[in-house]
Structure formats: C-alpha cells, structure tokens
Image (cartoon, rainbow, N blue to C red):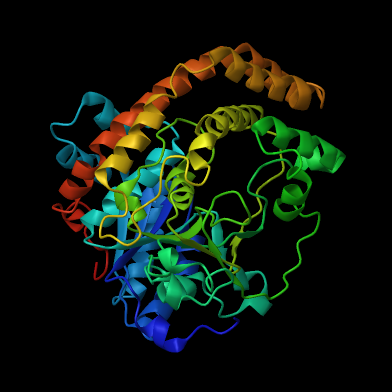
Length: 454
C-alpha cells in the first residue's frame, strides 16, 4: 500500500479544485510551505490549483499576509494566488446573499469566531471558483517534512489527487476490498489525514498531571467510557514518533477510528450538499458534513500523511483560555445533541448508485432531525456543562477554577445560544441548494483577483 499508482495521480477523478488556507494569524510560513504541494500537483497531475488565503478577521496579520502573498505571487508567476480579505468577502456575500433572510446574511457577515461558518464560506467559494473540489490546510500547520526529514516527498495532496472522487472499487485502501457491491461504485467524497506535533485539543496541562483527568473529560464530552482510554492514547500520545507508515483506510462510519481532520483534508460533492453548523466559538462544528456523510454511507478515506501542527506558547492567558473552554463547553452540547444523527443509518442511507447522493426525501429527514434539536432537554444539557466545570476545571487549580466557575454560571445561557445556532443550521440546510447554485454563477476572482504579475 506504500506506493500510489502514478497513473491515478496523473488523472484525478475530479475536474478542478481550489486550495484554501483560512487564517486569523500570520500565515506566510504555511503559504510558502503548501506552495510545494501545488508545485507537485502541477508537475505530477498537470493541475494549476489556485492558492486562496481566506482571512477571518481584520487583525494586524492581514497586511503581513498581503505582503507575503504578493511576494510569493511575484516569485511564482505561474501560480494563481488570491487574498480574500473580509472586505472582498463582504462584497462577494452581499451579491450572493441578496434576497436571503436576514439571519442567513448575518451568519456570513458576523465578525465572531465561528468554525462552521468559516468552513461554509469555503464551500460556497469553491463553487464560485468553478471548482468541483477543495483542499484545506490550516494556517498553523505546514508540511511535515519541514520538521521531520523522513517524511520528505509524502505530500497529502498526492493522496487527494489520486483518490478523491474515485469509485471505492478502484481505491487501494484497507477496508475497500470486500466493501460490498452497494459501496464499490460509490465515490470517495472526503480524503484526509491528521496532525503531527501539537495536539488538536488544549489539554496538556491536564495530561501533565494525570491522563485520568483527560479520560474523565472525554466521558463528560460524550465519548463512550469503554472507548476513551484507546482514543486518548491515539490522539494525545505522551511522545510522538514518526513511523513512516503510508497507510490508507476506507471510512464508512464516523468515530470508529481515525477520521480526516479539517485542517488536512480534501472534499468533493459533500460541500455542495451539507453546510456545517454555524455556531459561534464552538469546536469541531465544521466536521458536520463529513460525519453525517459517513453516517449516510458516503465513503471517506483516511491517510497517514500528516501535516505538522505548530507549537504555540504554553503561557496561560486568562481571556484566551476562557474563550477556549467556552468552546469546549459548547462542543460538549453539540457533540451530544448531534451525536444521534451520526449513528450509521439513523436518518437513512445515501443513494450511492444514483446521480444525487442525497435525494430530496433524505434531505428533508436531515432537516427535520436538526429542526428537533432546539429546546430539547435544556436542564440536562446545562448539567453536562456544569459537570465539565465542577469535575475538570474547578478542582485543577485557581486559574482553571475561575474559568470553571464562569462556565457553570453561564451554562444555561450557552444552551439558549446553542438552540439559536441549531435553528440557524436548520434554516441554512433548507437554503443551501439554492445558495450553492447561485455561488456557481458568481466568479470569485472578480472580487479578489489573482495577485500574480503585480
């Protein structure tokens, strides 16, 4: 399985794609790193894939990124580079959302941190670039071989170009052989790997004292207690060792093993079908489409070509830590509220043999299920957030106790705000097919022209 068939890389199963780096920081190092992937795509697959940096705020990093991207574009005149500032995005969304309900327009214009909306923007922008697929890398990552020389040449995009959109029967991966006739002709709609380096959940302080605290945290978050020890061992290793594996695994259900990470992923078709949950300061809501797709039987492919997740300062900044743990608290509610939808077959099965993966009746069932979430069991949901505060944060030390007391005092408010977010998600699910169609009739390059040649 280590080798990837060269003829597959040379003939991707999707017509065109766009490469996004969403950011709220200086992403010059990430952009320079991932240009190497785009060079590979051009040389090995004959693909000129636009690099698009999408800003999520108006912070001091924006002009820094503008200067860095302009320099990259001058140095690479054959590589399209686009800088999507918020001003350019607002002009684009003003045009795209004309006539939409005010609540929909507010989702895309809000300055608040919202991982679901950030992903939804990329989904719609992909259509407005005239592309069939998107690649996403996060701005605090870079290619692994820059930190681990043994990973040289193992680009995630090689796996994405080889297998995204391809029928399962033509995929060389664990679990693909013998997947059954109903799956063999289905397209692989998500291809992704994970991180090497910094953990993707900020629990190092907890783990430094006891992994038992992390185990209990995951139980409160809603993971099955019997699965937690193995999951924590896989996700939060005490010491990471690069083992050089180049493995691929077909995934037909979420949360049953390693899933593609949103910061190292490529997507086709799913982005046109299911928008992410537009929930402010809520972790992992941008995985909604991937998780639900797998629950409906739409195949995903996990690979072991990780990207390096950069280490950040371990300094305890109270305001940042409070915002972070508010995000964890909101995730606890999201994970448990939406979790039943991710049980394989709970809402039905995708039409893998037909031209429309999610027929109208299945889309309606998804909408009804999401529409039933607001207002459900408010006391129980607030109690879960309170347990997070009282069992994990308050006993740890006074710094975390202050955050824990804040979470407990605001638990009921978080639940009310999350109810509003879930109602907005139902609205967005209803509006999504029309939004994608309209996005396909806009040219995003008119709002943010390529920087090359400037």
